[in-house]
Length: 113
Length: 113
Image 1 (cartoon, rainbow over the protein chains, first blue to last red):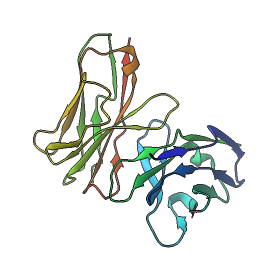
Image 2 (tube, each protein chain N blue to C red):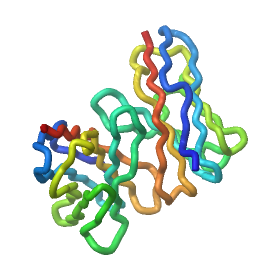
Image 3 (cartoon, chains in turn purple, cyan):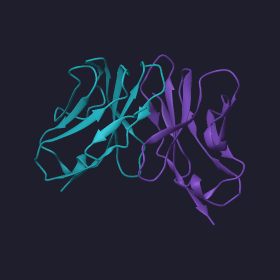
């Protein structure tokens, strides 16, 4: 069975500082990996995805993530956060040739002015 | 173009009542998904439609939950004899096909008193 662990329920960070949101997954088969963002009172929006190829994936709004197969991780990073990045971030996996997303519990990114 | 829409945005009901939650997917998307998101958790898969048929309903928690998609477009999630534990945000997503990116609606917040 697959599972996704987001190690931090909340991450407070000062504006313009860098941030890393951690995600680890467990799976015995190949997976596709996703980060979604949920802004206050809005639906989930795809931030970036890893399907294959380069392990460094760039997404929207200056975010990027690195797939590390040996550590089964897919951590999300941004070099300089803005107040508008305040949101909840979800990591998800899907087994290749499948459709069922398995989700982490989410990490709330709190930007301090 | 229009995204996935869900109605109502909020639903408050009493224990034991019947509720229907509606999802309008993106036009032309053949795949439709329902998820449930409880407070402090990531979304949890409920059911997946390919066209008019439920291809996978393994996530429905019990037989009080049922969903339909009679014309392969709009879907309705039906919950009978609601219980307080059914309180959650119910999310709908659609994708062009099962292996494509899922686009999410804003969700319906269900509160069972």
